[in-house]
Image (cartoon, one colour):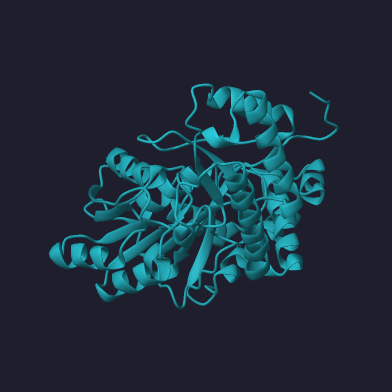
Length: 373
């Protein structure tokens, strides 16, 4: 294989390929008590809340760690210890919420959905009507196990009609798919630095309805993941309670500036959608089939059926594509052999065309003809 003079491009749901400006933002050191750093944290939180039109009703609480840390913190803080959570489950990250609730000792009700089908707002509302003891719904917006987009506006309306709280895992949609807190009411929306905002991993955040957060004191199972305590301390001091991921924070601050310069959510969505279209059409030309129907596919990550050929092996395929400069993702499904290719990050359709070329060349090297894929 030919040598590369750059890092491989990450075709994953995060970490993902970042811009040079975002990388350069991490070249400086910051003091965690320094007023300049704390100002950055405050401005960053204001900007994040603004992306979903929530400044009048919600606050942003940042938290160290991956996005899953913030999912656990939101569930553990905002759901009372006697609460009961409905989880529509159509993928791996929905299943993770159920696992988190089990660890937390919060009662959960699973609404099972096939992995290739979106969550059904009518079924969610029926489940809430049938069980008045359910206090919250925990909904994954974009299920990156498959790439499916669940209908958040309709789900939010159904939950609001029933007077329950909605906690949204928007990890792989925030910043690229339109969410408006005034049209899609929620108690909490969770995302992270290393996804569609195109920062680096290491910081999650929860956009919490102020009234729900204020009422949550004493709920948390963990000191480190107590969102109420984190928020109260930041309100009092402008500082993080414990050592913040300083370089991650300033990288996200720079990435948010680029998000605004690009044109915000609508323009970023358009670029990702163009990436997704180029990927699907190119892979189909190679004889590879997407797992999902186009109508439910989010422009975030695409799951493809593995070639039905005895020579196919994911590790060999992965290594061949990586040697050509691109890093893919394995499948997350349990019943069907698949692999995944992301559309997000500092990438354009021209990059995606090169990914497709690399995949085709690797399959040819593996001895897999187009008609056997």
